[in-house]
Amino acid sequence: MKRILVSAFLAACVAAPVVAAETEGGELNPEEMTWRSFRKQAENGQSGMVMCAMGYAMAKAGDFETARIIFERCAADGYTGAMTWMSYLEQNGAGGEFNPDAAAEWDRRAAEAGDPIGMFNHGVNMMRGFGTAQDETAGRAMVDQAAQAGLDIAKRLQGADYDLDEVTPDADNWRYAPMF
Image (cartoon, rainbow, N blue to C red; front, side, top):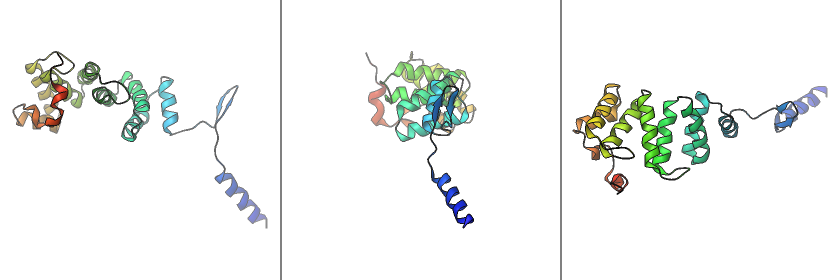
């Protein structure tokens, strides 16, 4: 009989929801490893590898507002992958307005920090004049750096003699047309 009662008690404890509670000394039993906890940490100026990965999960889930909060924090702390994701969000108006200047700036920052994807994107932006001054020579040089770092799509663009149609569907050409 005691075993049944103990088993029932343990089962009830395991099944009981875990609830966070605020006290004068802080939060008891805070959420961990949830998107809400990572968003809260980002809003409080914290970052880390796992949190930055959660930004990716939030973007893929379509919660661009949370992804943006996490990626901005991670980018400010030097995570170059978060910088290229911020570029994506700005370039596509995800969680904010379409902003080619901000997108190009995030790519530039990632490139300067040594990120091959940032180098490639920044090079392509310069070749197009998308969000930055057009400079095809500097853009090609940046793509070459990305290729030298081993980025396959940069090698593909080199192999196509820098024909941007090789890496961008023609359906997106409207986006890269001069805005003046």
